[in-house]
Length: 140
Image (cartoon, rainbow, N blue to C red):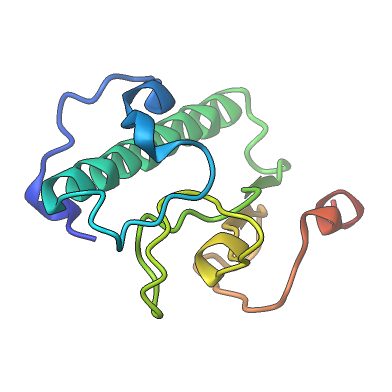
């Protein structure tokens, strides 16, 4: 994705992304390989995603600062997990889906992000073990 050609400076603290997406994107399946979107439109949609990630990062930073300010940062584990990934028209096999789409479990959808911060644990590790959202509560 080519986010580097567009600046994210001046981004508001919160953004209602759903209302800014083109109506045709819908909530489920939207194949793009049929020429429905132009390259500038695809770039715009991907930039909306970059904005969303940036806002989420800012909010997580605010949470971490508050935890630190309260003095809980040395005994508080943070676990951020998503319910699904986002394809954004990408894909090794060119399936070209923009949003989550059933019943096709493509890697971009099935690979849900999970980030864990544990005080005292080595940081920067990438673990390839398979986990499911039902693993979160019993693990904690």
